[in-house]
Length: 501
Image (tube, rainbow, N blue to C red):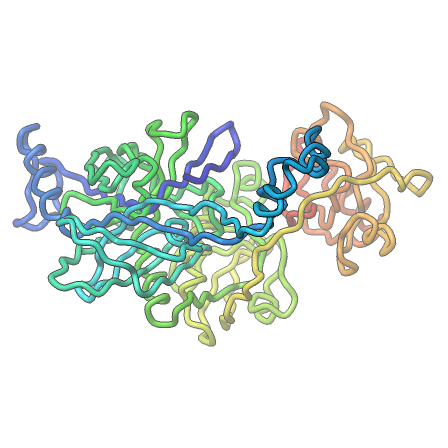
């Protein structure tokens, strides 16, 4: 089990792909067909759980991975290290020389690494969907069917960005499980999780969809369904099912303080997994389109500055040179409202729209620019393999002492011009423009807004900042307002912040 520590002291335990699927059941449900059971009592709901589990079980598999042994350096296997007090004794005492010589002449191998997870059959030809982290890097992937038959996977294709993988076995009489529509899942819908927790054997748990569009910071591509159905190490790659018996997610991670079930699990939506698996099957890799922008959501403070609803659209904080966005003349501060006929509700939603568009094809984008709606045609390009890799942030050194500083009393910060020499010293590229923050008054509104020493201010309101005069002009224009909108940059990228005055 792989564990990651995230904000708020959560530990995200990657548990192997277990598919989580959920669907609403109730007397008031109106959009179900006549052949779908509706629960009018606890007994009938229990019967639905039983029937869905019985139909799904033949399609669920257990996965065991093995990394082959490898030779290691003899020195690593010696009974002493360089700092051992017994080193001289073993090397110089004639009683140990023969033993040591024999020991050094024998090859040593590291122990085998083994892992477990789950998966589900998506095609009778032997295609199985699971998590990338379950099988990635394994030398041998053994698949055990629910009826006890064992097979070795002959083909393994993974996409670490989304944590989706497809493996293949050559086996007769396989039963494929139907895939549902994760976009139709709503908070409160019942779901069943099936997998092989702790390697004890196939198990079924139930719960509901607790939240949607979660991004806990586990993978590059995230839009998780959250569930309280019990999932544990070994469930990874297994299905989350709705009450129609359809897969609506792949169980992937848990938020846990103990390393086990704490009531918060995450599943990859099956709509994303279906597209990724199709790419893996057709091309052996995932070909994604990209826009070439840095984006952030519309927060409460930003919504007031841009006069737009919270959660509507995504604001551009950076445009990459020679990217589709650059060629379409998108600008920093543009708010993307709709793209390719789909409304945009935030960065993850926009990312999901963009990556599945066809490379080389043009799509219409609706923007909000300076309060006016603008339409642009954007031609998609394939995402570079290095895309979305961010630099680690480094602090501003005091080597700027003695250089010109300008006190900005309204914001309680001090700034100075950003020269090429200073930009290189701070680890920024030569094409970054703006003024650099050299100090922030403790306890000020600027500090509360997240401004820090070493950040670059690139824009104030609608004023581009490349010189101190432009900075002061932008500040003057914002003097009568109760808040100041800034575009700031650090080594993780650019973002808009609002400083209350």
